[in-house]
Image 1 (cartoon, helix red, strand yellow):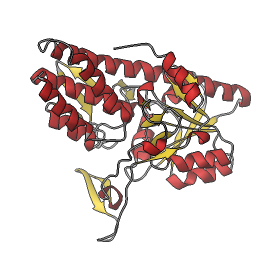
Image 2 (image 1 turned 180 degrees about the vertical axis):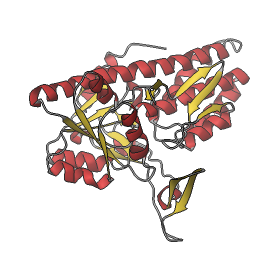
Image 3 (image 1 turned 90 degrees about the horizontal axis):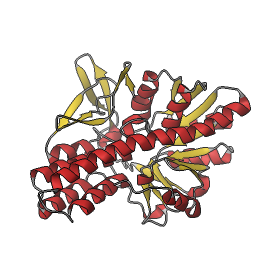
Image 4 (image 1 turned 120 degrees about the horizontal axis):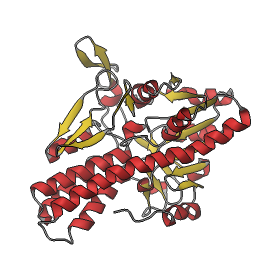
Length: 361
């Protein structure tokens, strides 16, 4: 997507060098980093230089491919997988990508493993771009239907960042918004600030600004008020893991938005690639929820003339609890949008998504 009218993706291979946009510096600094060692990749994922379930999966794929290039023995591959899996426990795409590569390379001669692993990593990257574009096309049909019915500007509320920065390109929840904007549908986006890391205020707003889409940043707790007053036409969010029964795990605070939307009879859509659906879990109660450092609550970054610094905003010794995600039960979800179409949030419907999913790797 666009950064100052120039096209970028979040991760790419350039002369056998993996490059990423360091998202911890956005929107104040636009910095491109190189990832070389396994530790570089692990820290980039853990410290959220790259974030968003799809992008985490792609990053892990390149990490494993480069590690296999360095040492293709089975013991080294298993060690790398174990280390990568510890970085972010909730996003299922990480495990999905690692399993695809390991399942393919372990059955071939050790000399062929590096080439196969890198080809798969690049395929995973390319598939993510294609899948997210298709999510945009399918989601656009929902927005087009609303616009044809009302002939008015559509007000959309989104939570956290599920734009192109959370994927390789296009995004999940923002992909239909980007697509509809390109088709000329008038839009306005309510952007939840998304404490504690402020991914909405810092990342989603920045993406919308670069795509010239009107937006307004709101405090997280304002969503219900806007819905009560008829200022929201629909909500659309992403997902870090969705179970086969349609329960959706996403950034903390998503559940509260879904409850408010349900109470106010406002459509609540979830956009995600098939790789985010965990076929092995029966319900969202089984999803491991990552708990992050309390420093994310008690310290806040701000821009200075010579860089970005953090300051303490709580008094010393304040106890904190910082779960990164919550689970929205399927009954509060209107539709799930994937690269294969639009589905109901239940097992019977989502199984059709998999029947439409052709073998890619």
